[in-house]
Image 1 (cartoon, rainbow, N blue to C red):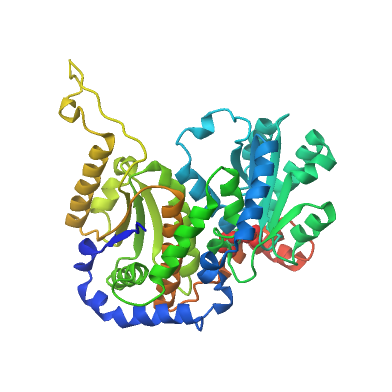
Image 2: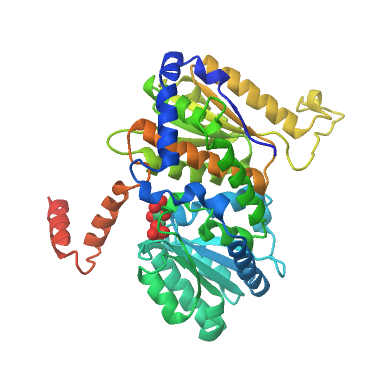
Length: 447
Ligand code: PA5
């Protein structure tokens, strides 16, 4: 098994004392997580999930995926937050960078996303694309009551039924939701959709290895068995405390840096395929740790792209940041830079080199520059971008997040803060049941 390699060499010396002092706390947090006796322990279903995923669940998901692949040119995944980002992250990391620009071919639908925003133009453009096309819908909502996906699903369902007929549409819609509760469950039963359950004890941002992520990933044509196997192997790797446990060490280091005044962590990639992986990671850490006036602010950059925009800030702005770099050792393909007789651009010194060789030197040069600029550097190297490795990375970050949240002294498995905007939006939209809030918010805004 090729595992990820965590390198703290260029981080430890920025917070040596805190790192040393936090050894016992990291072990204690990990033990609490594994024993399941900490805050939020009714949401620990994800801890054993990869090792305990039954083969028949994977088989059933693959069967549903095959049906959608056979009958659709586009499959729209409707969901937001944890019901969206995991699948988007994995599919973006595994697909070709320009796959979305190719026309779909039979048996290999394009996987699209909706319900992750309330953009009117977004829905307009999506519905235009789907006009008269063979499409299906995977609607995902744990609560079954979230407004954004509910709007998108209502619009797409209407379109699908109009285009394919109500009967056929039923077989092209799959709902992933709570086992019993919520409007989506009721609707799915009434309409006769195939359904999958999001386990009660798995929160949205920890749900990518449930059908929430696995079905869309399988529809996109990727091997979910390998993804789960990677996660299961990582679960075994990080289960026991010790300085050789990469998840414990990552959690320990980021807390040490936080205590030393580094309040912002940027997740860095040198591979554009990892852009959405960073989006998934930001939700995981932001929603898990940002509470009670505490928490490292999770940000991200795509390099070298953002060295030409955010590079200045990272190098010389307020010294409150550290970076965690995900470095992919082996690109899946090989491309070399050609020689040019005239050499007007002056880059013949690079001729014959792989593009990745230049990228790796950019990565190394950035590490030296940033550490010179007092930006601690945590480096996570993975062998390649494939299903197995992504499974490992997902579980590594999930587990480290649980450990890190406990070290910080928060409940990493709730998200009380996300309700505030919803309450105001419902009041402003005069949702039945919100009459008092409507009156209060209108009076407040009229001042
Ligand atoms: O992590 C979370 O719990 C959230 O981001 C949810 O996933 C998000 O709000 C969507 O919720 P639901 O799946 O209930 O529609």
